[in-house]
Image (cartoon, rainbow, N blue to C red; front, top):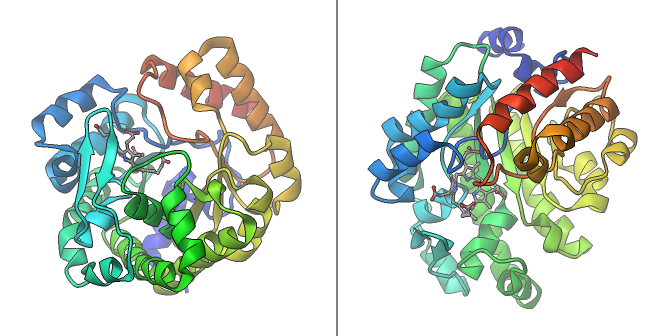
Length: 354
Ligand code: CP3
């Protein structure tokens, strides 16, 4: 039996209907990183916070910045304002966000470091995120979906072990080869905490959740199966068991040739596709009932105009007839002109209607 609260949302939110497998016209949309530095009103609230973590952990501020893009543009969803590395912070790792640097963490490099992480108080530390979700669900109409999210274990572990972001993530890749059991302990811990974290966001009112595996593409295929597909599968299984009917969106970035396997094995309900996934390949090779999201180049959005129109029409045309949530292939970049989002929404609505 479907829970009546879930049923009600299915009726009201076009986005949730698509995430659950319906074809909806016009195609609903939200944008990865829709809250953030490209919006002047974000900069204003950001200046009130002591630092980025303080912004994430203060529900009154996080609620406000989550709402800003929805208020400005009428997007079909609000995504809770947080970061994938809050889980590392909540586990007791030292995490800082330095201006112009991105996240800097005290690296986890040994089994001893993994054992010192403290799973015990993690949900107390993350409670402000649940409070932000609760405020969003309480204040938005049911037509607007509320999305929760978390980083997938590989991507979160990659930052935890490397200590910062970079293109290679050499340290976690070497550690996974050299001492798979120790690295596996870290991944196992992240599977447990992430499944509970997503469950708690759903309890607080999230209509769907997304797992971001932004660095899935750096791994060789056996390691991708072991450190990306298997942990995501375990999380999805647990979320489906604890919260039946709530869609899980999987974003396994730059994993292209492995995506069909990811789609078959992981159990994710929706595939969020990065910019490099060939649009027509996705239409042809991924099961037609599986909803697709994403794929638009964030730099087409920076450019706007004819380039943006061509790309929007191309993606909507290629995926016409299947459940489709319009989105980017990666997050909005800070140099995006805010007026291009309004332009994008108009394009999506008119291209869908044709
Ligand atoms: O989508 C949204 O609007 C919700 C908020 C959100 C943030 N981060 C806020 C943020 C989400 C969904 C994320 C996910 C995230 N965080 C990912 C996965 C998606 C992706 O982009 O690949 C990753 C890898 C991170 C880790 C992270 N956080 C990095 C690498 C950085 C620095 C680089 C950057 O883009 O700024 C952050 C900081 C961060 N997270 C900012 C925001 C708005 C900028 C911080 C600031 O305001 O100074």
